[in-house]
Length: 323
Image 1 (cartoon, rainbow, N blue to C red):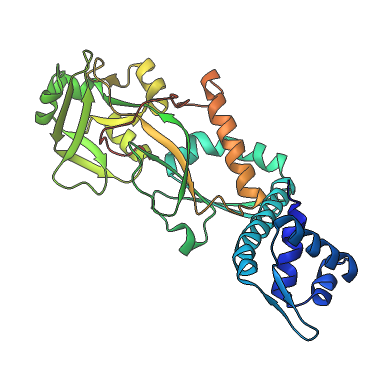
Image 2: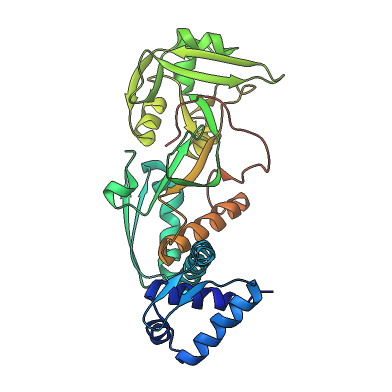
């Protein structure tokens, strides 16, 4: 097999225009470099360099071969740089954007452990439901929860788990409006939902026998924060969709009721987006690995509400985003 070092040597000689300059850059004797190039030409069975006493130039074969040598050299250097980054200790400023509810219920309890494990990292966590432009705003990682993943352009998405949603209401509101038996009954009832909706809250359900049903409900109240919506639901303003980990205690205590328990809503896909895998610094790489491990372990009850992703299958549906 051909020695890949010879390809690197040839690329340096061609780029620097001579053996002396290339030998100086590579830190090898000129005589040895000349012997290696001569051996390479003999192995290939063709001349790569046209030598004269005053000038060194590439043959047609040498120009073609140089393109491959440059690609091999550049990929090797990139691999070395990325490996060095992986092995380096995470340090520096890590800028992360996280939705409000996810930060307050899932991510927040993990921060002390992450920073304890990597004390050279300084975390700048922006808690916001706003969708940010990672490159323009200098953000390393944005955590998001959506019912489905659209095209994120040049951003890379790492799936972390699923957040399951429940349709809930206060007993008092259900006593007043009646308890729905099927999704179509919701259209006549007051609802609460996330801000930014137009023309009503649209919910998509999967039934006990696999049937699908969509319904549009009129909002009595909207807000861009799920904790605020939870208070509105508890107060009897209307029914609404909440992540299951936000309402387990209320359901157990009788403060809320599960509406249409035989019907399910699309789960929210918990994921992280970042600009590119190439050249990722150790701090964000370690944060993604840490978060993935912790959320994968959440089924033991140490963290609320995130379940592992299924190995196969899609996540269709258009339920409101669980933020």
